[in-house]
Image 1 (cartoon, helix red, strand yellow):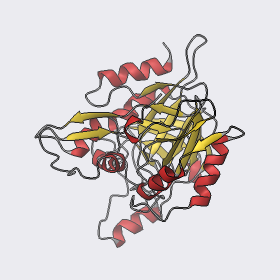
Image 2: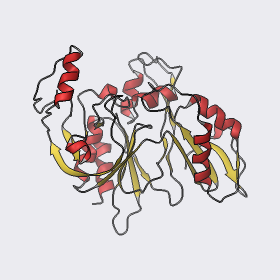
Image 3: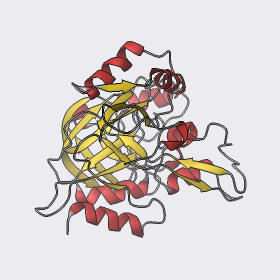
Image 4: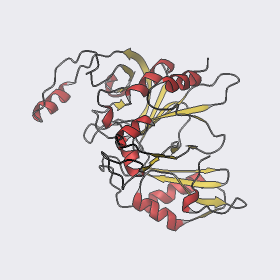
Length: 319
């Protein structure tokens, strides 16, 4: 059975997220689709986010006027489900810290179409930054025991929140039930689960990359030791796909998810790299509006010569 199919079946059997498995585009890097749901009286926005494998910041940014704790009966909730993959090799695991997203590219079988699987993550908080660069999975650890580093122990003690020197495996372990060890920081950086799923999508870790418990449970069995891992921090992403130019802009990492002052030079550079030598008409007014909102959701900002005209704001459809 292909690895991606095993992941899909695992997710479909889970009580939370539907399978986040998408065909990998032959050209371009935009995947997925947005959707809307209606909340129930008993829902919270965070509960809806977890149900659809969306992180804290993503659900909040897509629904800025919806109460996080009491959205209310029948409230329209946007589930952001379109993502632009960072411009790196589509191999192994790719983590974009700025987008709080992990992408996994399982090696396809001989007759399988390539796919990508994506999950929301929590990266390191300010001062405990998740390192960027290229690493690999060197060990798979079921039911990990957490041994905090001396610096973590000192930080918690200073904050008046002392923690044990050894945290046994089990449901209360901050690493969750499954962990993938990398070579980063001398083997101290893991991709793992959590005992605090409400914080997924926030930059709150000591440098590790956290996933929802059900997401790491699906990912863990299909990621082989030796899998390459590429970690980037790309808040601005663009892709030219089927003659259409898409852009997404995230707040800077460690900005408390608040849009910063737009860096139009950096945005223009990303757009130019995505366009390459194509002749593309860009709606720069829309680019400016996106830069001011910085909600991370991809939008159509231009079309290549000969392609269909630019869609209106209400026509932002996926692939």
